[in-house]
Length: 297
Image (cartoon, rainbow, N blue to C red; front, side):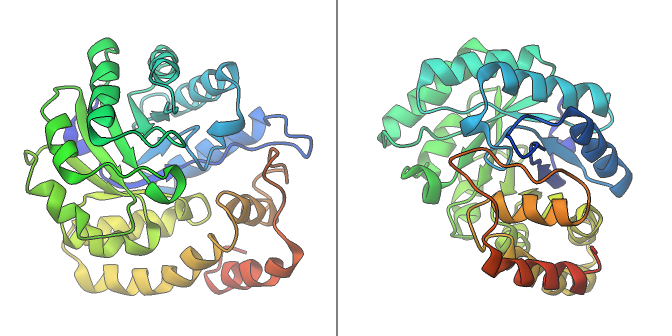
């Protein structure tokens, strides 16, 4: 599939990576999850992002998961591979691997831990965009990376023909306005904060890369489509329904609650990979109750 700007919109799931209790990737469950998302109307899939536990998958595993998702999707919706790292050379290698595995675009998180300045971020992304023939979506999530990709830097990067959008998860919805002031209309802004997606779309985002879509793909798809179709009252109603679920899916570190929910729904085995662990028992009732309220169980 050739990524065109209009295709990166709506509910794009930040897909979990199904694992057995010992942490081994469960390929059969992965195929089944992709099939479910296609049936439920998900508009795009991000394999091996943060929610896909990219930080603890090997490079070989990441490429294999991306390829498996690409093969299963078979061109029906966009696949945007998570290929970020805190080393420019490693991110470059992962992005080459993601593109070679067949991804339509690559989602690249800001380098974490080493806290680069804005000029370092500009050069990091420019280097990758110069050397990999792939559409690139920037990913800003300061709460995880201790690094904030500011709007002026996004504006500079948006001038590169291969940098087509951003997943914005700064926690400040108004950042969408700051970005939109500095980029061309075709540059795509996507929410990276499920609970703030409606506000961000009101400010000009065209959808979300969503954790919650793992659990209720049809509802997230309907929510995004309602707003983008001008059905504001319906979008507001769905947003109010979804807000408590957004909350419990971050009751512990993502993707711990989402994977527990999917296991409870008999969609995946219970595994997460260390240093993550299974959802603490004191949170089971909270997550289960929200699944029941939203009729996911």
